[in-house]
Length: 457
Image (cartoon, rainbow, N blue to C red):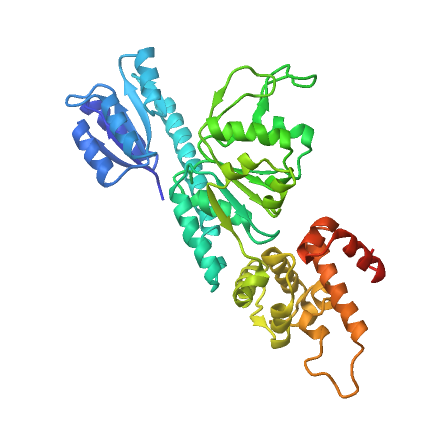
């Protein structure tokens, strides 16, 4: 489809020249001689580009420009004038003009400017399309599922999105969708068109964290040859997502607290406070209440982050949603991988329902993706599921539903159950024995003794 161009030019001969020239190039052209007519066309059928004369009989071209840019990001507007003036050119660019041409205008100069501006318009529209596609990815609707607890999280998240200045703390096990929820809040807020910057506090070395967050001035240290903007500054007017906030050092926690209280910060090596408008969403799979008690996390920062608090349940706590998620992931990966996989066999679905899901929704998604990749049929069977799923026995299967007449080996079953619980606790905590002991509500020394006894160390 050819681009549409509106000409607003009171010189009838020049108006006609422009219209014929652009029509010959294949553009769809509409030409008027007054600002009032031009504004009416822009209001009813916005064109892709406007050629706007600066001096019109009824209304100033700059005034038209200002009115149009108050309402529309597009169209692109090229100002035309016979009175070259640096001041008016600057004023036009400030008000949103995309170019400024001085009469008499050469045809090649005009066509070049129009082509450049239409390419810029295509880029703007492509970016908007990608943003919208990204928003749709985070509609959150099917991840809410049937669980009453997740319906409550969804309801609160909608309220949080509407209040786009309050800090947010999202808690939940690894893989429960904390980043997904943070993006949902961002895209549903008034900041949705601004940057979303994710920072994993556990992935950045402690000695680099401050410069990563706040940037640095030239000469702040040996290798600081030029000024560097930090991630907070890059997220101006948008959202900063601090993942794994529980891993942030106590020293940096103090600087983050100051920023949240004043919304100002200094670059490393800087002396001037920088004012910033950005929202902070933090997430953790750590027990911050316990971290506060142990002196690992500042109490004042904890409550400052917890203005709005959302807690995501584990997949084990919402088993009614497993089948729903599995079906949704199956549909997505079948489409992406151009396969015609229709569903799961009954035994495969039973496995999925009985598996404890230490990795939560992320683990379920990965397992379904792998199953779709390896299957050569239309149904997922247990053999297509990951090795981890097949070798992990559901907890109920460790204990016979009916004790046989000949009896059972009590010690063997107790050891198997203990081994299963310890293995899963360690899996959930990434091998952290202190945290695994807390999950099992036993002293760390008892955990170490049991691991050695059961051959798990």
